[in-house]
Image (cartoon, rainbow, N blue to C red; front, top):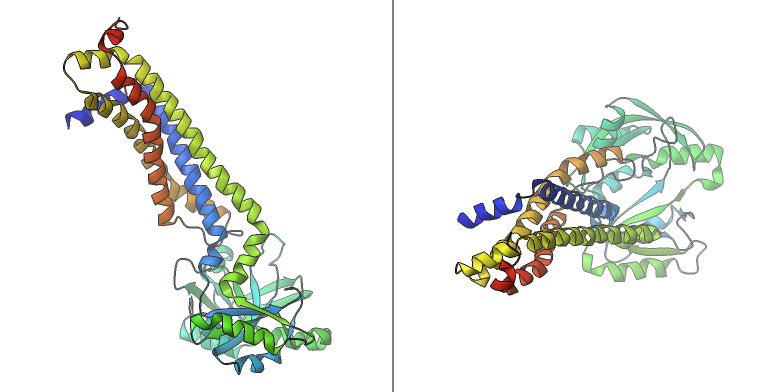
Length: 385
């Protein structure tokens, strides 16, 4: 208790300097935590991927479609438990600023393959019966104030025109990592309209979602699906859902790497700042340490005071930074919800924050501690007064 009291008094002997140092550490830990959360949000879709699902698309590019006739042939492949399909719709609500993921799906099989989208039984029933019905995520409903029964007009980008949908259900995520900002409607509604307007685009889908009986058979089933349609007019490329999501992240990998580098540079900079603060503190107190030694204090007593003060300052700033990470991340996630539908502080980020606090305090205190314990009593006393 005496040592803690001594550390506290020594730390705040120069209050302005100490408070500014703590503030710097707080900002650094806050910035590090926020940047790491941004990286985590970037990989949210990857982390939420299921090992029991495969995605099959056109082997040339995702912009090319596949025939709806492939469904039954895929279903007959050994190891496949279920097959569904979806088209990226790409509609916008009122203006281009109101963009969100929208998909035309085969509702019954799609919802069965995605149990993480939790929908009330009566809402699911209404959705299946209404050709113009749609299901939206909870965050999307809160964002625009939509409710069951509302009519939602979307402007098509890939499929031109104004499309009207009736909200029949609002789903919520089974887990925190589930995206609650998506918009689903019936593929048949889209296909029927295309048959009347652009017949050549009808009976085509964007991707097949394939359910596996056993996750460990993913490689074998993928090869079997691609072999089935080899040398056809529309060859397939089948991969795990995680690999499919990673293909999108890889397009912006340079940005992710840059964010990671910046987050670690921030920690290094604040480490130098704290080291400078502790070096100044140790230099000012050389005479005091010499007096302590003359009174019989051992080297480990001196080391405890200097090293402990460094850890105390780093820990104080780190704790404040960690506490502030949650409200700042919540605010940032609300403002950037269009780009990061899943934005939450992971426990691993908090562990890294705590670890870096200890590293900063430890590294910053090494040299001042070494200098303090090696000072000779006579040399130190010359500086007194």
